[in-house]
Length: 186
View 1 (cartoon, one colour):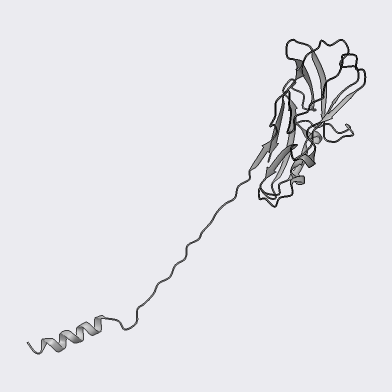
View 2 (cartoon, helix red, strand yellow; view 1 turned 120 degrees about the vertical axis):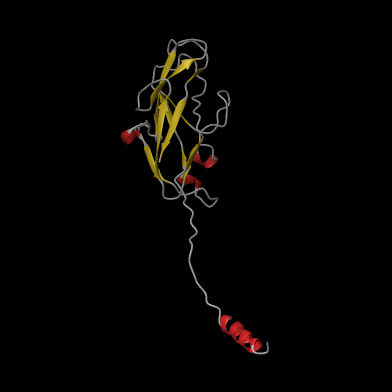
């Protein structure tokens, strides 16, 4: 029996390595940020418009000159606002729902009748550059991200509206309105 003790002890020592071996491997962590855009267009009512809403004001039916107006100005922070992921190219199209034209022209219909007043949407206060829903009439920009450090002027746009001269003559009194669809493509 005493012979087995040294053999058994030797076997235990031989089976226990003095140094532990290691094996290594790798794994990855990943996240994908996808393109995204947000649009803010309206925060008021027809009687008290804000945001990108255009209120042409109140005029007598005898008004003969053209009428121009714009959505809230950039410095008020209430114009049409689009925010997109950083470096994401996007375009903004405007289409009055009263028409199928893609050129930024529409008609405001009287709330209590069928009479209409034509108007057009523009990119600037010269009223020479139509803002529609295709081709050169689109506004094109690149997103600057969603963070609080984003310069709001890069994502805020004022929409300018125009009613041609003579549109109000012989129109009944009342409120005329239309809805403009904003499409952001990215």
